[in-house]
Image (cartoon, rainbow, N blue to C red):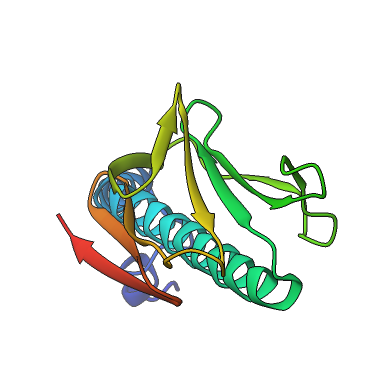
Length: 164
């Protein structure tokens, strides 16, 4: 004779139970996914800000060591930046030992504010020169919820992060 307690806990799940569990999981994913995207954009803008600040510091060091002007150039159209150094003909050429020569970053990162840079079309440049007064400038980038501001005061470069 069969025991009645065997019927209380069947061996499998019903289709209804599976649909309910899948519905709950879908709702959880729908809630969490926007936070993951925002977090990913935040990491990308922090990385871009750190990379730009490092390039500016490198440009300042290079100008001091070689006693030549170094130009930091940000191209807003292509979302890229590069360093150029003054040559013997008083024009600028790409810095050979600067990693990547031109660095591009994520299209979700946009120019938020800029001050102290010279503008020529969609390029903004900042001259770092030991023979002149060191610049005071600022450049800010943003995503949907974070602004990174890089401030150049004399020979010092600072990064500041703000939530919008």
